[in-house]
Amino acid sequence: MRKAIALLLAAGPAQAGPLFVEEAGFVHEYVGGWEHFVGGGVAVLDCNGDQRPDLVMAGGAEPMTLAVNRSDAGAPLQFETSTLPHTDVTGAWPLDVDGDGKLDLAVLRAGENLLLRGDGSCGFERANEDWGFEGGTRWSTAFSATWLDGAPALAIGNYVDRTDPEGPFGACDANELHRWTGEAFAAEALEPGFCPLSILISDATRSGTPMLRMSNDRHYYVRGGSEQMWTLSAEPRLLTEEDGWQTHLLWGMGIASRDLDGDGTAEVMLTSMGDQRLQINQGGHGWADAPFDRGTASQRPYTGGDGRPSTGWHSEFGDMNNDGRDDLFIAKGNVDQMPGLAHDDPDNLLMQDADGRFVEVGDVAGIASLARGRGGAMVDLNADGLLDLVVINRRAPALVYRNVSTETGNWVHIDVRDAAPNTRAVGGFIELEGPYGTQWREITVGGGHGGGQAVGHHFGIGDLTSTRARLHWPDGTVSPWQELTAGARHRLNR
Image 1 (cartoon, rainbow, N blue to C red):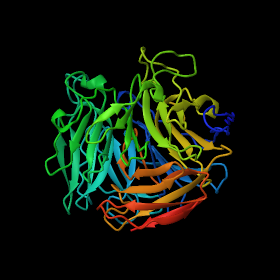
Image 2 (cartoon, rainbow, N blue to C red):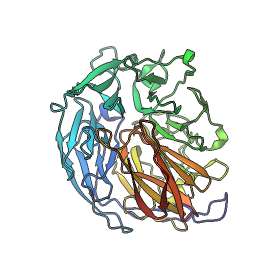
Image 3 (cartoon, rainbow, N blue to C red):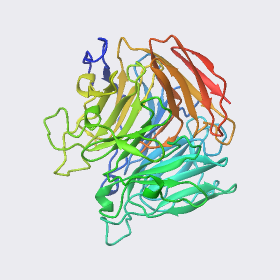
Image 4 (cartoon, one colour):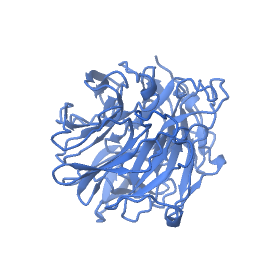
């Protein structure tokens, strides 16, 4: 099916708005019962080195789907699909675990979690035993990773304890931090757990010390729980109000992180049942909820006729029209048949205006699906400089939209490479001179809902024909400025 609808944005200079056509080319659904009400994401990575982003999609009760990108530059999207022999998968995240330069996969399941070693040709093999990783048997739903003292550290968020006879309410399981010891991963419990559906390791305060944020599903922690922030010291510690951390309660589903005001510290977008919560970074460990008129609450469907509250899942920032301002996508959909929440719940595409407010354009842009959305990704799939859109749906086909917008701004794509062990410089920051000031981008693994990306970084730069960027590496060193021409891919090496 193909859709194409035009839009004129009211704010700022008149220009064509974002426009998408649906180009699936394959069929994939995230299916299953109780243990697959949540999860259902997509990992985006170049698994064969051809500079085209490939997709690995969680299937729930069915096997994962690998979609190898065969799209020509600027052309309609084409994929070659196969299955990976893993079921009960809730999500997958790409990262280079062993520092060999080839991307691997962290695969979370309702059951044993897996680390899959990538071979550089879109093949993946089990590496739990080789890497000394204990996958456990829990119901895992959230993932993030970083490198601490030169060694990988993997955080796993676990949902409801399936073995608790008093559950599911109030039966949240313990979470885990797996640190590389030089020979194996050693696991330690992060307790109490309050049923996280998204977690993110980030140096949000720019202190040089990453912290682990957990967005927890209040539906199951019931009482006594809250959102959490952990230190990643030798003995992880949960922050309290004495540290400046404020108590936040939320039906947490997903985390997106992006610096929206150019001060070098990232804001966070937290999806939820009801309103979606944008929080402005106040420095230290303080976060302030954005005003309602910022336009990000998206608390009810904007089309489809269902006036009940919305349920947000995956959220992601990206510049859909390359004007130099980040926009926001949110996948929406009822958990299953919850009567108090909208059943016809369209996905959101919120475009950021010059005044920092976000305006809904999902319906006129052609992406207002009423399927039960879960995971997603904003990524340039055909190297035309426009971010396309992937949405994973529960019990409905996945959607792949090609961005066919016109009259867009210029762009640059930045790949980052460091020496082993942290070959993608996770924990570093890209500093880029944009059309409205400095754009900062932290390199992270995690967040979202059920999946993430490792395919470089897309920046819209508006009318600029060139720009400059430099890397603030994870160890604190800063590279020289590098001149970047618009409309091209660039590699920043250590």
